[in-house]
Image (cartoon, rainbow, N blue to C red; front, top):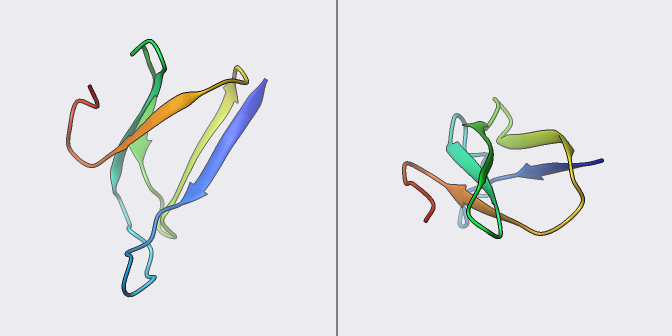
Amino acid sequence: MGWIKKQIVYRYTNKPMINLPYKLFTTNGKLVSEGKSDNFGYISVENIKIGRYKLCLGENDGL
């Protein structure tokens, strides 16, 4: 099993994007995880199969 940890920041200020909604999908479109970034702009997903995923940020359905 694997994990993903990524900090999301604003492009021009480099400040973290706090409470940003995200969804993580398999390449086939199956929802694996969803949540919000933490107080430092990090998203973290643990115990997932190693492979390719699509990470969608913000208030969208991801597809």
